[in-house]
Image (cartoon, rainbow, N blue to C red; front, side, top):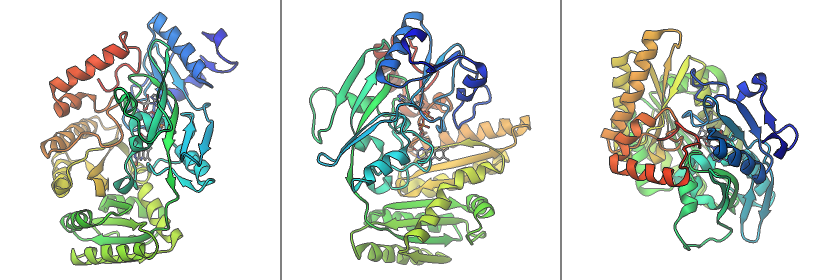
Length: 447
Ligand SMILES: Cc1cc2nc3c(=O)[nH]c(=O)nc-3n(C[C@H](O)[C@H](O)[C@H](O)COP(=O)(O)OP(=O)(O)OC[C@H]3O[C@@H](n4cnc5c(N)ncnc54)[C@H](O)[C@@H]3O)c2cc1C
């Protein structure tokens, strides 16, 4: 394989390859891979997969390693293919599309298209550290997705290298295209189990109008949940985010921005309605917060002030992580069940005697319960793991999902059959077997 790859692409020195063994889920059992290939082109990826399929060697695709479900955890005797060197982008303002290689970070895509007055909306909180290929592979969501949809809504086409090394092109720069099966959509969110994405054609939209921001504190989860439901019933906020008391305090400890430490919930809502309508919509949301007994409501149309509250929300995971080891959930429920999910999680935390902080993309019912524990305490670690499963069971019982945006990866795999059922698992296995008969692509992830 080495002779068919560019100089420096193949790493086998364990001091270097060890840096590719984990993603942000930080699996303590992750092993150093046999090798890492820093692909520079589709041809490099084909070289690796042809070699791997010939020798039956597992391959773990990797973007920027910010995943939270262990999807990019290396496997024993396997090769990690990282796309970090595949960073080209071409923007076409006429068709409002961009053709990007997978290694570009989300923030770099946003900046490149902004130079043409265009916008790529999906905005995971990790937008500065995650790759666009990883976003496509996990069908990433984010803060503005409540109004603008998730990654798949912006993927018009893909180039994918299949397990045997064949490169296929799916879709392209056409807003409408129903020829054949929806294979592009099949690969979006497939978490590296069906092929390696080597190029993405993205749909772009005009730049986002200026946003007005409203922030409200509540003394009860129920009040905040009531406000969320009323807003989503009648308005289209461009952001509607939630932090609980633990997250508020963890963020305040680091950022010192005057958040109400006694509040049980903080909501950050934004409107990007055109012109004066943004301020009007923000005022309506402020009124809803007040009507639902918010203890404090603050509105601003200043871009920097608004961004400071978004940055605080985006910082919630790293801030809570400073308190201990994290088991990070991604459960989502139909909106009317949001309060039941959050209060149910509090009960699980009490029963299992572990701290669980909840942050959420509240407008789409997608929560991130963060289980904080001491990894050096085996008893507490066991209780944290039990809570991790019980939270997913609770979400399923409430008609929700085990993952709204992070993917199943390795961490949530055991709960997938409970969520989708055996028939869907059998169908999923048939698709996997058809595309990857030897099971070399990201083995151990998803199914
Ligand atoms: C602080 C923090 C906040 C976050 N907030 C959000 C959020 O708001 N919304 C959200 O959706 N996620 C969020 N995430 C999770 C993570 O950033 C996303 O899942 C992101 O899409 C992963 O991108 P990556 O490039 O880091 O992928 P990786 O972690 O490298 O990989 C993720 C998965 O995709 C596969 N993969 C990667 N590249 C390819 C490819 N080219 N072809 C095929 N498969 C591939 C991997 O095998 C793995 O299964 C957050 C993470 C952190 C650390």
